[in-house]
Length: 302
Image 1 (cartoon, rainbow, N blue to C red):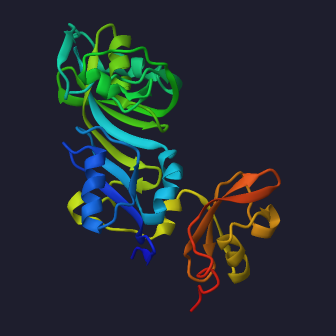
Image 2: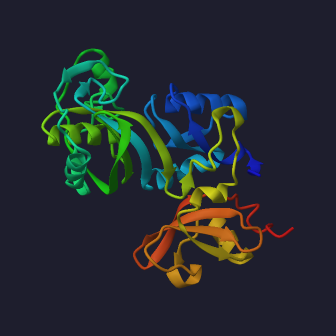
Image 3: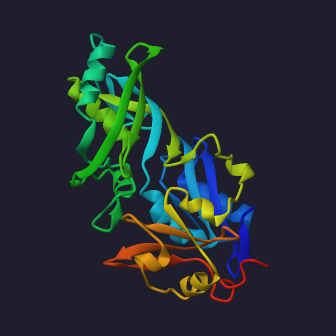
């Protein structure tokens, strides 16, 4: 069940399996209508042609989206050698073709190895990145191309497999937030002496949230707020500390009972309700987000 509605209505997390043809904002708009609340945000934008895991924060959980957006991403897709497009995927217009019949699976795997680790990527023109206050995709629609600063991303894993079709290879990618798999496919094509684009991109997971638990847009399930901090270290506290947390109290690490680098999800020891997320501040810890109201923090065991 979702967390009990507060003054802003339903509160929780939705793990959605985004369909092809929908923008991430389309999913948010649908969820707002279904759940009858405007207060919905998402973590981890997906291109319209891509499918898979999209996380929605509902109500107060929108304030936790920054912790979810930073989680590693997992994808599967296909790289098509020999054709470059305006969007770097199969949604765009063909802008160049290359003869690459001699490229083998071994060649693609060898090229892919050079992209594992920390790399620099130039964001594609068809993306939501802002340059000079405007989204790149807006400029691209006007036929304008601008200089884009490269960004550092991390490719943790990049596997290549035969796809059963000439010049097409399957990709399995584990990467940091902010990685463009379209750009990765295009860069691999260039590294092989030609060009390439991406197709059939599917995000299989964001951190611990997998496509196996995702629901269709038409059948949203709102998980409790505590599910939004599944990837964080967790500390359970009693009534006295819960009351101080509700008022935004700052603690010594020992007083809150936390270890490590944080951030930490603070939950009530009896109800399991998420009270707040705390971050380090020197030798102390301070609230990054407080979700519980002061009046309810001392009434958790009723």
